[in-house]
Length: 323
Length: 306
Image (tube, rainbow over all chains, first blue to last red; front, side):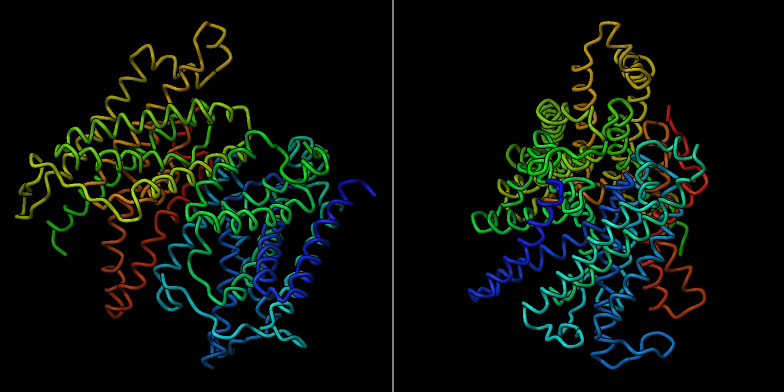
């Protein structure tokens, strides 16, 4: 086992252990904190497929995070009010149905966004993905049917067969399970033929084309998978807060997802999760000291970019091999 | 819908476009010369507005405030360039995005710390406070006309600066080959700081002028920043001409879309629904325009040496 694998496993197991310790101490608040880490970690792992493996710096992943969130919010509201949704289909409070709906919706939107955005590269790609996310953000604000600017409350957390999702620990385990699944998907993608093509496209597009693989379709596929995983996290995030609002679509959210990845280590398996753990801890620790915690968060991030390249994983497991 | 109202909306669109140009010109210059994507440009806009509001409140003079906004934004820009940005030129865009995102957090929260969460207000100066009569009997505030005038003056000034002066020549040379001008004995470090401060001053000027139209508050730069990104993507990154045309296009599209789309949908559906759909679509309109332009010209309308 390489050092990186050991440390990755330690980080993942550490999160699980932390939740169980919090449970044993009766500190449900810390379980919620761990849940938040798992969800943000999953969202950033999704983005890591596009950004870390494919080199596609999407500054608009909040769009997919929000779509997942609104899928949960809208379906749950319709189920709660017993109003039919589309074509007479009812809403639902079953998490599994919500996840599938959210992921498919995000996937379809990602195809549209990807078809246009992936024609560009570099800074253009960053700004176009940002612009698309803003488009959806403004739509969510100005469309009054689902709360508009005020957002949408989920009165009772959605259900999962055989579990009481209202218990913090059960909900954490659901989120942790999906996170583990997301990490497995990431690792499998990374080591597959597809992942090799995706990473080759990041390193040298011309060479990839020279061996007969067009980068566009590979990237589009990666972008869509990435969006679907982030949407899944969005649905969980909505259930965690029992509330969705247009702020899930905001560019701050997109920025935060990128921050998590860089903080943890770009393209590394456990990077996004490590980033999410550190970020939530910062938020919690600094927030307890000063209401101006974002100021210090900014300073810390700046220091990480300027002086600690490679993030947490770079620090613990050495520099990544990818270049 | 009368003609006068229409003219008024076109002027509003122009005024908005001109203000976007002040932001976009700096962004596109910084990207063109240094290859840097600067998310913190909106913070410099905010710095300008706060400096203007503070100095105007202390001295009672909007004009001193305007001078202060230019000075404060340029100084903040130069300081940030020397302390942080300088280290980012050789990095990839991802690092630049993160570092400037961190700068936004620092600027926004720092400003909130000093000035509190309540918005400040800035009065329109006496000299420009009236309104002029438009053909057709409508009135239009002089101040907004003055903003359009300032924007046009800046556009001409930038054109002359970049096209006709020695500094402009160096900036253009820096855009096309930075190693070469370094080899010719030009201090690139100083040149970069100057360009960054110039861009910052323009953003600060925009912030001060907008501050008199809206309230001055933390986060006011962010919506403008994102629109300025749309502008430079449409215009072609690195091109001042593209920034000007993109700004006017975005300003007019945004303003006229909000005005016309509800009317348009009103033609064939009930008014309340038309207002809702019109407003929702209008808020997305510029992004749709951008997507269309990029679908046909992925490098923007006037791509500089891309």
